[in-house]
Length: 378
Image (cartoon, rainbow, N blue to C red; front, side):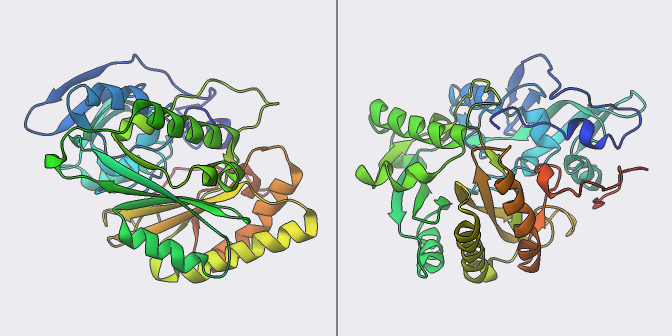
């Protein structure tokens, strides 16, 4: 990262007829007109989130899924695991897919609609691009609303997990970067339609957008403990699309975001889990001198439509994602950190996504074979 979200490429070519040999599949960029009355937009697979948000904003609409990295294509997100702290909607992109059209292993064009093919659609949107090549999809959209964002900095101490839950309870949505020396918390509220159209000064919105760009592009949130408190708390009134960034390509020598993915489906265990994970990170730092840039914290609403074995599966409710991140994917201690963190995370109930983070795969693991099945994993 940063790059377009993609399938696992040559790591796991599970489908004999669809061989993934490139980082991404590019389709013509075209967003069709909004289908009046249905509040869905018909979008071709190669459209990026940034393009989608810009198109909808001109029409007074928005997509509820608005993570930082805008270069991910809707086609790739539709069949992979994603995350964004929920704001009056589920926090993963696949939940917004109303229908999808793809080319299957026989070269046939297949269309799945949630109203008629709900189970098959959930199957496809959790397949990590191994069931076919996405061509087009329809997405649930909604009238745009102003967002109020307030940032707060907190010390990392024994009281932090409870403080994070308290701040989440105060807001409609919350995201945080939690480091060993401090945390930056971003609370969000979706304002009612009669709030007018007043937004913060463009210069302030641009400052905070640039700040987030630097954090995410470099994969280090330690700036949150040094730069932001000098101006915190930040109070912004803005539209969601204004904080979605575009990233230029990076070289292997540049700092860039790498992360591991851990979803914890039991919010009641939040304080115990976060405290244990921070203790582990502190101990690892004491032993090796290395600490992750931070843990990125998201709260994601589950729909109840997915199989319990899948990410965001099981009954309706809330999961939290607590992802360690780094600015150097090639750092051996980063690989060791994630490998040693894995058993602890699993003991705390984490569901992981090994195809995102290669360090978690055993070097001598056999290549997957056979037909991909719902809920299967390696």
